[in-house]
Amino acid sequence: MADAIADTRRLYTKPQNLNDAYGPPSNFLEIDVSNPETVGVGRGRYTTYEVRLKTNLPIFKLKESSVRRRYSDFEWLRAELERESKVVVPPLPGKALFRQLPFRGDDGIFDDSFIEERRQGLEQFLNKVAGHPLAQNERCLHMFLQDEIVDKNYTPSKIRQA
Amino acid sequence: MNFFGFGQTAEIDIVLNDAETRKKAEHNGEDGRKEKYFRFYDGETVSGKVNVTLKYPGKRLEHNGIKVEFVGQIELYYDRGNHHEFVSLVKDLARPGELTQSQTFDFEFTHVEKPYESYTGQNVKLRYFLKVTISRKLSDITKELDIVVHTLSTYPDLNSSIKMEVGIEDCLHIEFEYNKSKYHLKDVIVGKIYFLLVRIKIRHMEIDIIRRETTGTGPSVYNENDTIAKYEIMDGAPVRGESIPIRLFLSSYELTPTMKDVNKKFSVRYFLNLVLIDEEDRRYFKQQEIILWRKGDIVKKSMSHQAIMAAQRFEGSSNPEKSHSQSAEDGKS
Image (cartoon, rainbow over all chains, first blue to last red; front, top):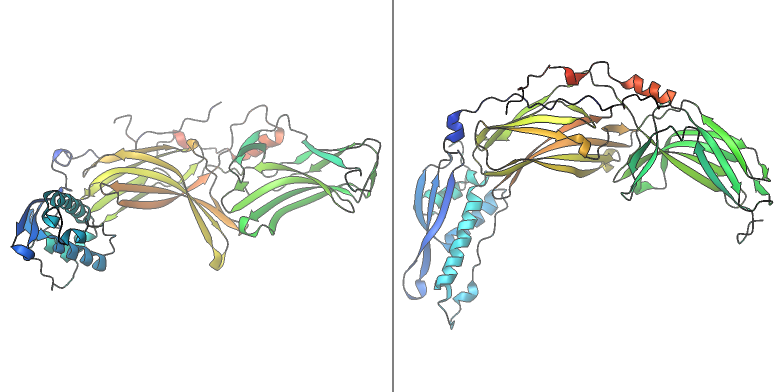
């Protein structure tokens, strides 16, 4: 008394090219934030981090790059992306102003554990942002990741066809 | 005399003539609870008996007339006062007078038109019911019996597959295909997703069934979207050239047929939403409308003659399940 059995056979599919199946995927993008180094002396000290990128995405000019950036550079990038793109930009690890006050028991913003926490947060931030298809269109992101120096007087623009 | 409950009153009971043989169907109430009601098709006769039982035997019940109505109405929740009746039939059972004892009245609404399917939704309800009214000076005595109406369709003549290439330039290109555009409520959606370009890190992919209920007209249109089902079809990261099959059985879900512009008051439409989610929880999606329709039951000997007529009118003569108009791989994975 059951209805006729429905035809549930799969639709026809093209066999996959073995190069596509076993070759490197086209979405390879790895960003590491590491090697914190404190530069300068006295009150003018600041910490820089190495931002290393490895990718096979055509939108990035360099398949491998390594630059040094400080926290204020990350802040600049976040502000640019918020203003120029429609992306909901994830938050950065904290600014830790209270750590910059005098008379602390520890090393303040040069404390090893703080730097490590901040390093992790910056790495998470960059991986979230750099993988976003819309953020990848912004000149500021590419300049931050792959240019030697961040030119804060640049002209904001969109990247067209890599 | 009818004060403080000393006056005569009566209980009304409505019994259908084919209550033994007529099938019942489950229908959701406004509160979400499911109940079973007698199921009718368009054109079927609604006939039965009204039993009026006096509460105090021996006392008379004075009344201004007894009638039975068959009503089909649309009720918009934001405008409860105004019911839109699209079917309204009346039969007088008794002229004004008095009942000296409990009595039974016969009624028949012959070949009643029931143009729309019963529907209880988020903002609108369409229902059919019998209503008996004993009119009295101070307060009427009424009783309602709800029924459920199903609208049947035939296999559509034209039922093309849906095939489309969509994506984000240089990031993600997919081609999706669903084997039909019109599915009956117990059908299976067979399809596939073919990846042409994958430059993002996908974590999984799912298909959602969304019901969109539209009420109101003109500037005050209100759309209510409800996700009826979420069905994961892929876990992990695909690469270029990979095909992911889809096989989604609709009978597991509570669906109604697609209803377009019912009595110009509301619509109920269904969409398949293909959703891809990447490693950072970003969602990429493509929505596609499908038409749902109700297929008639297989004819059984126990059905009433009229139900048989109704079902036979709607059984398709062709059986598309047996046709091989679509090339399909024979069991090869």
